[in-house]
Amino acid sequence: MDDRAKAGIAVALAAVLGIGGVLAIEAVTGFRPGAEPAASIAGVERPGASVARPTSTQTTSTPSTGSASRASGTTIPTPRPKPAAPPLPTAVRITRKGCSTGPVPDGTPSGTCTTTITWKKVATEGTVIEVYGVTRCLSAGDRAGDGSCLVVGTVVPADTRKLIARAPVSKGTVSWTGPAWLDVIQSATDGPRNQAIGVDRHGDDIYFAIVVTASNEVGHSKLVIADAGTWCYDTGCEGP
Image (tube, rainbow, N blue to C red; front, side, top):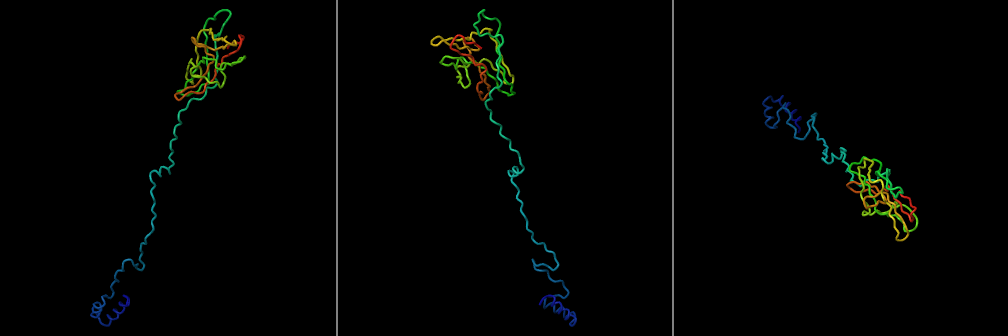
């Protein structure tokens, strides 16, 4: 029998029996008429009561520092390119003033000979232009004819090159001066008569060609021919 039925019976009996009967009923049933019902068993809802239901929770993972850096789009510095040998000098030109390569019928000219090399200026720090004299007529042929002492594609060994001048590539020009008359004609008579006509000399060295290269701490560019010289098989050759 539930509590409500018990309460109804108790009220009815109280009306008939009086207060004494009520006390007797309470002693027997443990129920006191008019009292509030005992608390509900834990976990059972009371009518009309609001019970907080468990709600699902979503765990949000915290990205690691490395992941955050990647997600933020942090720019990674680009490695600097490794140094390289300089490019080929361009627009190389040679001019001379007061120079005579002899021989001359009226004696030795007086004054000085100034040779100037020019090239396209390049604002590159640490790069210099080097000018070399070539001490052999490397491209002379072994048959009758004539040509240049140095042609494009000819190998120029290190022991045939002597440094004449050097200057920063940003300068665009370099010059050197010597006697006005330079005996640069080399003749050979042991076999077919021939001559190699150089373009400059220094002491005992005749320069049969002049070449230019760009140089830095890494290396050198290829050689550029500034003056190629001349060779021929007869005495009618004309010098530079």
